Length: 117
Image (cartoon, rainbow, N blue to C red):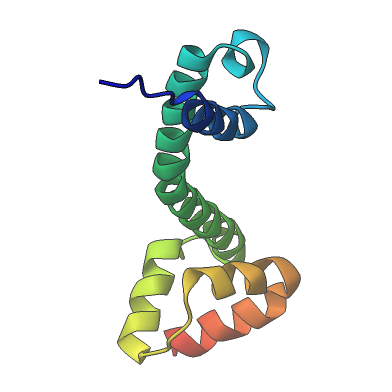
């Protein structure tokens, strides 16, 4: 049986993996086995953090809305604002409310006053 040479294919595969890890430090960008492990780890982290980013932004928006709303009145809070928004069937998501809270507080005050009435 003849010998199969697969150096070209293996080298191409390793080169492709090396290009992915070229910005890593130390052995993580030089040794093939370490590169493979770090590549798997990086892709797992990227996949996990795509969901995490959505959670973090939602948390940030809620914090911003709550800070502005609490400054408006002593007994008014974020949860009451959202509850009243749903009761009045106003379709404003948290991202838009947070932008309004930062850029135009008076507009958010007007919205919350209209909801309370």
